[in-house]
Every structure is written in C-alpha cells, then in structure tokens.
Length: 208
Image (cartoon, rainbow, N blue to C red):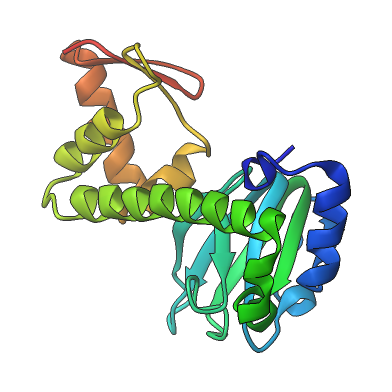
C-alpha cells in the first residue's frame, strides 16, 4: 500500500476516495497519461509502476525532467502539466491516483480524522520531493560532465553502501544530467579506467 495511506484503514481509504472524488487509472507500458488525467488542477500519485516526466523543446530535443516511482507526486502546478511540451510516459504497467485539488483543499474535510492523516502523509512525501529537486539543482550547477556524474552518484548511494542503482538507462541518465550521451559515455570510461567507479549493468559502485 502507498505511504500516502499509512495509518488509514481500507474502509477509511474508501471514504477518503469518495470525499476527494478520487480516480484510479491503470495504464499499459509507454503511454502518455496526460490526455487522460489532464484537468483544471489535479494532484497525482504513482501507486504502482513508474513514469518518465519529459519535456521536448521547439527544436525537438527531449529532456528527462525526472523519473516518478511509487509514492512520487506530480500535479498540474507541480509538474506544469498545462504545458504542451511535457509528457508523462509510463514505464511498464502503471497505476496512478488522481485527486481534484479543489476537493483536497475543502475546509470541511478537516473534521475527518483519516483526511488529516492523509494530509500529514502527503506533506511528508512532498518534503522528500523538494529534497530531490534541490539535489537535482545541486547536480546541474556543476559545469563539467565528470562533476555532474560524481555529484549524482554521491547523492544517490543506496543506504549504507557505495552502490548506486540507476532508475533508468544511460540515455536517460544523460538527459537527466543535461549532457550529451556520447560525451557522458567517454567520461564514464575515464572514470572506470581511473578506478573511481565500477559499472555492472545499472549498478554503479563508487571506489573513491
């Protein structure tokens, strides 16, 4: 069950969904979900699966903004879903929970204990999202590809280890870092030769 519903029983969850006019959608792989979920103002939560949030500019260049996984939050204002340049593309079978923001903010909701628990959970997740965005900004302030890579690896170590498990392929890593894929591949090769990292599939081991 999603961390959004920690402390909320299944019965209360059903009441919450009714209270907030919640919709649950399940999508197959490689679907742009925006045409289905777009509304005046929504909050979305990834319940299962993952989504690549991308933006394509006037010249046709696509940038990976972020990968949304279980419990990650997106929304009309949070993710600029009103912008025709952005897409939310599913990776594998994916389930999302969509909430009408106006319903979420109704004052009378606070009389419901399960609603208050839900809001606490929501803000805990939003706090993590803000941290992730700050980490991304920290990475992108580095001027060289090497430093962006090293900053990314340091920020994404698995707890208690020197391992980084990439949530996407190397093409998307280059897009996430805002660098050329070929140039990044060369830099990864140099880092391996200098024994600063090891690469096995999507696992990066930091040696320095």
